[in-house]
Length: 93
Length: 156
Image (cartoon, rainbow over all chains, first blue to last red; front, side):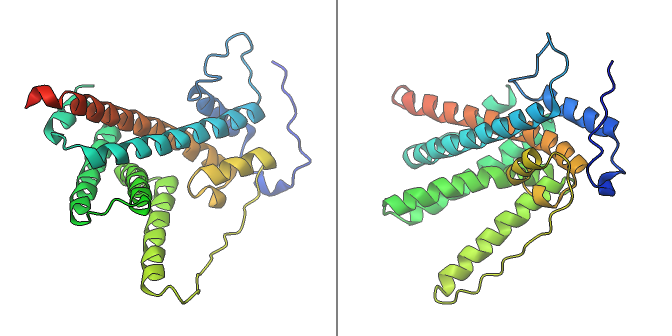
């Protein structure tokens, strides 16, 4: 609708990157973020918001990997697991 | 993404297996060995994902070389803890739009500091997809271990 002018005050070094290309990438990114994936009422989420949510989401995933590694390293220490059964259960997911 | 998931699961389980085998040799269970095991599991998870993706992505290349460097530095530190010659390679920052948010993102995506804004966005999308799968698989492995260790009594 309203074609907002890009802030052209930035130095011209990044001219080759088109605005469309960036918008496209940002909206792709938005699809991956559970927080703002289904923001229906306002189609347009600002790029800054998408970047912020992206950072938050990556951080939360990193924390989850930390937590799961911690639990796995504990479980690993106290159990002998049938790996064949484990692989089977992963593949049938 | 499914084939990457399977590759990741396979690689990760193999390294967990190796970790487990190595554990048998050392018998002490001090806090430091537990910390180390945690770090090894975590590194194994990230390394397995990066190698499942392969070298076609900038983030996976950056992650793999970072892990390799850390491993080398660790060895060097162990072999000669007296010498303090660590080489710090500073990479020049490219010009980007939306500086503050992009800088934050650069630090979170492996190799992000050396990417231009467009590839940063592209690599970030791929990185998020892979991280999500990584978390999913790790979660199901944890679930599996937990359920199998609770049902061990019935099995034997």
